[in-house]
Length: 527
Ligand code: NAP
Image 1 (cartoon, helix red, strand yellow):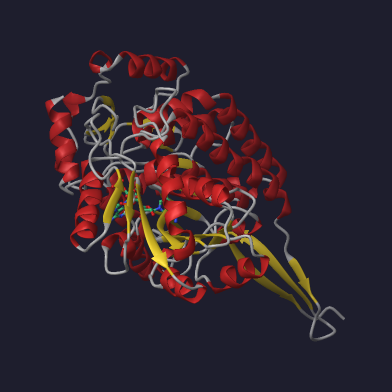
Image 2 (spheres, protein in one colour):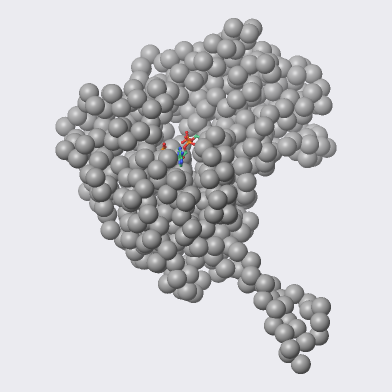
């Protein structure tokens, strides 16, 4: 436990990526005895289903780190150690790449229908283990069970969707420019994919990448976040059970920069797909240049949520609440700035305060909980820094504004009034349960404020005017816009950002393009 706390502290101080954070081989135990009754029962259920995996997956084999090191996975709600997982680095990653590379030929040569069937089976297994996967997610990430179950459905939907889409990857025949020629376009899998994912959606950020990659005939090396590897490993176990061949899907976790460098340096890895912070995304993009890899990036946001005078107040409150407080504010599409027109500001603010007051903070395993803890101490300190910055510049706390009495990394759902564009709360992603209210006068001003950022992922508007819905949606420099709706992600629509929020799209029919190369074939002398 002392080691757990020391590592948590190291994490809080930002020293996450040093191998020293990995424990020595002797500490490799799954400590059943230190767990609370609820967590212990949940872990037993997961263990009984055979889904408590702690080793990496390379070439269909569950393997320890080659030096035996491990890393602790902790429950952010309690600090208890859930498991010790393999702490891997460059050697294991190189082997995972080699395994994905040697499997690529056979996987890509299967018919689309065969790949589709395997994916469909994986989907069925995820759905039939919904509860165990949701429990794992709540335990290692902190989100309430209801949200975790929602994420299992959402995550599984990408596997189901791309199982279907696998059969619809058509090429083209182009009308020829010379009569003795025929011009064809083939769509072929890009090759081995390196997929690096964050902790806030431990399942869905993986399936949104792996689903289309496998559907296209690519093979994958996944690196989940060190905070949430258990869900990823359980999902990979289900993939093996579904008959997805050994080596097609590999999982390594541990030393992020080492794993990242191994993926970047390999000429066998032809594509990097990343979801996470903008800072790491930029590093991966730069690192991909040397081997000219295809890159897709789903990065941070700074979502404006614009409430106009003519909005339906109930719809606006409900939508803003959902857009802001899901996963305790830890999503890339969370409303980061709620811009409210002056004529409705007071009315909206008091209705919003009432709604936010009803949120129940607690351990995600408790049924009444709607707000779990933040992922770690560093996340809470970031929220505190942003709140201090705002209040020192004239903003007022309307609700919350401090750590929750539950301790650990729980933070009170917070509303801050009169936020302006010189404050961190306006300029950067807070990634916590803090809703900044920013007053504005005109539509033009709202659009200007909304676009006054380098981010461009999600934006929301609330208005009853149809012309305004169109005008503002078109003027917003964002990849996703919700009109009178706060929850807009779905497997059937393209997800992704513009500006520094990323490159490429995930989900939908557009999502497969990220894993395909076009090949033009000119057949000549046909007369
Ligand atoms: P992060 O620190 O960038 O981590 C994301 C992943 O990158 C983790 O697996 C991490 O590993 C890994 N990583 C860190 N440094 C690396 C390096 N040098 N080389 C290779 N991999 C490296 O982001 P996060 O804190 O987990 O996630 C929060 C961020 O993700 C927010 O900014 C959020 O907006 C963004 N996000 C975006 C989307 C989207 O679709 N646009 C969706 C969800 C989240 P370790 O965890 O093991 O260190």
